[in-house]
Amino acid sequence: MLTIVFLGCSMKPASAPGARHIARHSSYPAHWWTPVPEEDKPQWEILPQEAKPGEVILSKRNELGLLSNFAPTPFVYRGKRYASLEGFWQAMLYPEGNDDPRSTFPGLTWRYTRDQVMDLTSFEAKRAGEMAEENMKIMGITWVMFVGRRIEYRPAERGEHYRLIVEATWEKVRQNPEVKRVLLATGDLILKPDHLQEPNAPAAWRYNEILTEIRTALQRETQ
Image (cartoon, rainbow, N blue to C red):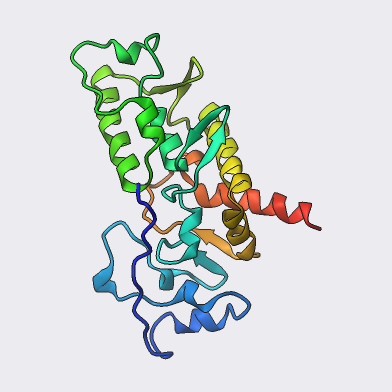
């Protein structure tokens, strides 16, 4: 994934589409909704101005990108260090050790070791995961492994994989004060992803909802 590089934003006059949304959120930084020219938009991205009233896009074009799984926000979880939440996520797709049957399946090549993926961020980590998923298809499996346990990777319900992602997200927030600050700064806004998601994505994929639950818990702690 990326070493977060916030893409440049081009300002539009106040009458431009999206300016009305900025006015509705005067208690928040206006640049969270600064319109970005459509021609600068990659296919995967949802731009800041696409937020509806009461919403904010967790855009990598500003500090809200710290809340992205891609962000270089290192944390330690269960005794191991991860460079990003994306690195944690994608590392599970790789063999955990010699006892992991994925490591000895004939004919497979693993581009990275699990430890190497743990040190990745942004699109680099995502691409590593995509390569591992190709191997999973060859093997005909839908599980990953964590601390010796097989875990279904895309469960329809909130299973063990979801709980791991939530726990790791909590550690990212706790161990990175700026991430916590930015998350709390979103107040009561509805958090929306900055990228297109598949219909009916599993709960673990909906990072904006996980962050919303964490934000609510943090707000209660400070009351």
